[in-house]
Picture 1 (cartoon, rainbow, N blue to C red):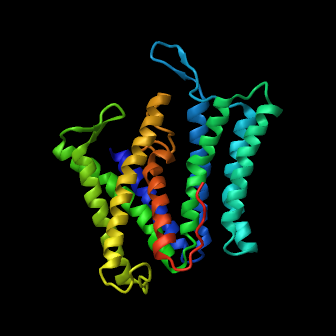
Picture 2: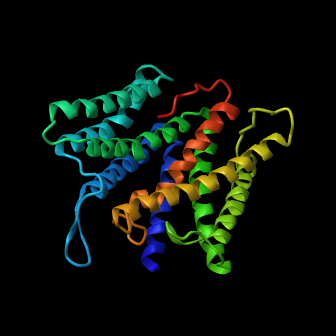
Picture 3: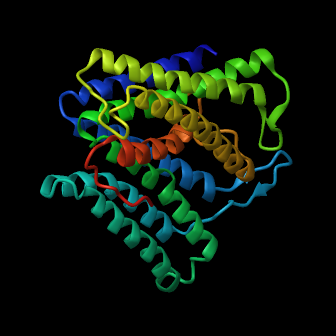
Length: 310
């Protein structure tokens, strides 16, 4: 427990540190996203393509084995993806997403071409595994990069992403531990309860509304999105963001639980003692960030460029 608590404090400290670095240059936040992308990609590739020893001593074959050329393609995609966004933004502001979109299509095409070029070592299972490793987490993390460029609303968007999910996750555990009751998905995650899920949603929704209130209180931010003429509009919208993000957090956590159960592992990595890997820490956040980005782009940020999602 002490190890888990210490790791959690350090992790939160790193997040807070990068939020302060944004005040120097918002692009510095991309370093954190880049780290998530590289470490998360390694964890996914390792989880899907490595054989594991069973309790009886036998080796369990990889869930989705990838050959060397497929792994190299995945890592090149992750290495280039985030820097390419900032390079194109520097050359032509507002067009960074085009670079990410083109790179994603090129990534998929290269994987298909490898079925011919490296046909002796590639197969469709490996191609599917490589595409999954490219999309999760790197392509999904693009929503954080894009939210980081929402101008005066960017800080609020990122705060929502990195506050709602941990609050929902923490209180789902606390409420579930206190009230227990019927299991939410016993065959996927035996420890999760319906009471915990409800508690996570309630507190996650409250955290969103409270965060909006505190942010407007301590900054010059003025809501100018949909329904700005009605005073109650932002409160309802941010309550909805909190509710849906809390649900998405729960769902993201369950999705990773399914992946780990099918692979036969407990954690995606060991970089965060007591917590597992980076993906174990940001699984729900990845799902929530997609929703926050969509809502801000469509309803909150005026004149925002609507970017196709991957």
